[in-house]
Length: 144
Image (cartoon, rainbow, N blue to C red; front, side, top):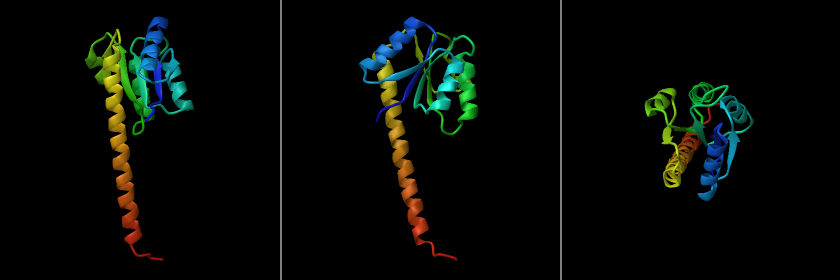
């Protein structure tokens, strides 16, 4: 399964590191330089994962995360905090996971693999539920 990934990072060197690490483990990512750009990117297309820096200009990652949760409550991307701040601030904002800087390729890959597996399991469960629902509707007599 290919993940649609957005890297939200304002620092050029950190952008290059994140994009390079993702490329090395087989992923392509789009780039946003602040929280406002993240929200604009989400209007244009859905993302499975956002690697979100916490400290960015215009709108920081914590506020962007809260707005994403408000706007896309039930169908939102998996948000991974990229920061050196305390993990509890990221969790309180609603971020799903936390990676400290500097990023480590093996830790990033493990987290993305885990997310991919859980997403695949959810898809299989949803497909089974839909199949059961269709079966139930097929056995209900027509009342017209």
